[in-house]
Image (tube, rainbow, N blue to C red):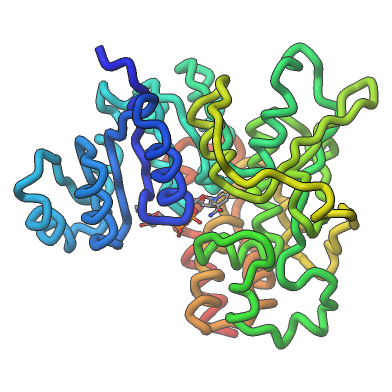
Length: 387
Ligand code: NAD
Ligand code: MG
């Protein structure tokens, strides 16, 4: 019996995936890397496979299968391709924890498979909980599966809750850096460029989440993610802008006491905590120095200018497939913005138009989520064609 913890990393070539590999590399006696997967980046997947020797690799794009297979022919590594393979590799007996570090709706299906197979989930892929939080949390409960958050804000809340499981949460405060356009007026946002939107002040991340951070959609998605992770109502979740990104989030308990988790912004810490909970393993990450941050500041987000945040709060109250439709619209709109087909403000306009035109199915089945996603994508493409 393998005493090390078997890990599958879905999306190993991305920002979270590559940082997770650095974490695993630091603790060879603790982790056993079993699975690496990527969407299209075959070159980096091959490089990672040759360096870390996982049991299996999956390339999402089936046209790249032969390339990966040829490059790894002399290695004792199973090579697979396609969505179905992604779902199957997480079920392996050797896998204990699945780190879902792929981006977007594509994370939903493999996460369901991993939960059904009883695997612990280290969840970076927030879209999974936004799209189908009701279904995922119910399934996890049925299967006795723990979902540990990787998102820094949710990891902060989770860390504050250790030792408090009997004590109800009164409220949580999710902190937001405010992104590159903090303080901008609606008028100023009309002319911002793609290059400006891609420059996040504090974090280096994948393209989609970087744009989501600039539009505050990321915080909106995180509000919905928090609702499902911690079983909260809309009025128990607040967002506060904290430009230094040192206080990663806060919990307020029923006696009025507040707990915060702090530290320098570095995703390796929440990734590691999700993989080693309840243990904290020693690191040599740089330490926070108060003298470097004589002021930590807080301000209210502007929900009138950053309409995506407001929309996320509204959608959360709608339940059903509404958040699934919002997520689908946003994936299409962000992709169009990244390809310079629409302006920055049109992202929120398209999101709102799609949510308002969507049929909200309450207590949806998996198939109904899939359908809501398809319909919303189609609608978003239609709206983009018109702008
Ligand atoms: P990224 O774009 O850097 O990486 C995404 C990874 O997923 C890549 O390995 C890519 O090959 C793979 N992938 C993409 N589409 C796929 C598909 N259809 N099928 C299979 N694999 C696919 O993204 P990221 O910044 O690492 O973010 C990953 C997830 O983590 C997102 O859900 C994001 O919201 C969340 N997250 C990221 C950060 C961060 O600091 N980057 C912080 C908190 C949460
Ligand atoms: Mg976050």
